[in-house]
Image (cartoon, rainbow, N blue to C red):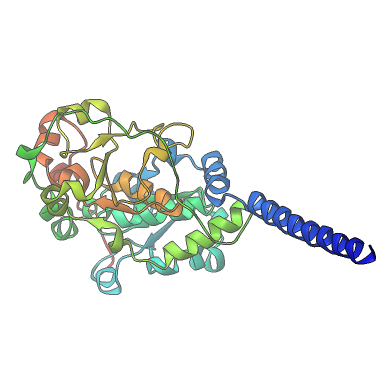
Length: 328
């Protein structure tokens, strides 16, 4: 009898331990934070450009203010190009060092506008986005980059890359967005939004922008290799877009409560706008969230520039080029 009682007591103890183990595992599973949702909810509440307000400034504005102490110019081009010619008072900072520069070398709050400059405006837009996500809300990028400042800079970037090569391959078929579904899994090990964001930003600042560039030739040659996002107004999309491209409405389509999670998590996303500069802001944002992003270089100007000119849309042309002074 005593043996039976002892056996039953031991059995109950073992079952209780197993049940407790399952309970602890369940609690751990349910308490593991969803880093993606934590991050996206924070960013949507604190970031304006994801709602279509892209912080671009023109060469004319910068020319009028380059002596203004409330404007800080940060040139992220290579040393050789900076030495060849740069805007007066500009600081030359490698892109990968920008976050450290903002945190340790300047007091960003001292300035009304901190303007990032590159060759065409695309990489500057990308890094401006990362800095804005980091909380520096006074960062802007120069539209068209140094190509808008002087002709020789334009010849090295925009002039030779504005093309009409694929205008005849555009289609007008309207493609439907996929249903919303899964989102990327972030695994920084952090629980607070700011800590998750800091880790993601550090990872992306360590990655060169060139890794996000997609050439129009590659996308038009094998469009099925990509999930192609046209982020432009509906009139431009309906006039003609890359075969297979899906229209995402500027200002609203990339929010978590609308169409954000209709983006795939297992395919390269090729995003394009008219100039590639607005796209660079979005590529930065979506990369922070864990999507596999690419920016079609020079946007629609890289494959249908003449159409943009004819329609009066956002086309690069000679009228965008100034002859402003530089320090050589």
